[in-house]
Image 1: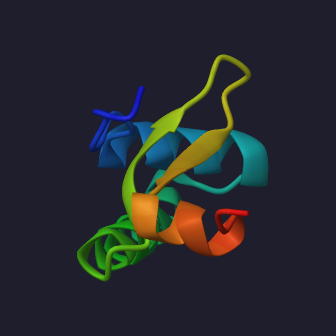
Image 2 (image 1 turned 180 degrees about the horizontal axis):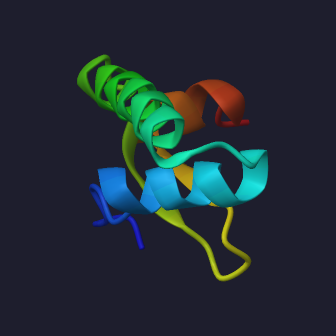
Amino acid sequence: MADVTQSASLASIAAYLKLTHECDEQEAMTEAKEVMQNLVAMRQKGFITGWYFDAQGHLELLPSEAILRRINPPK
């Protein structure tokens, strides 16, 4: 799954927010745009390589190799 770069679209994030936070379409889209901007910023900074919705419908982040090494340094 490491080759995923973006499988959760703006529309799917907005739909998720609308469902989970009981907000209207416009508010969900506004919030989804902010989420997407933050995801792109994290990818540009090298923190993550991508994001996707898992089988349970949770938005998951794919950490970069550099971050994984910092979290789990070699022994």
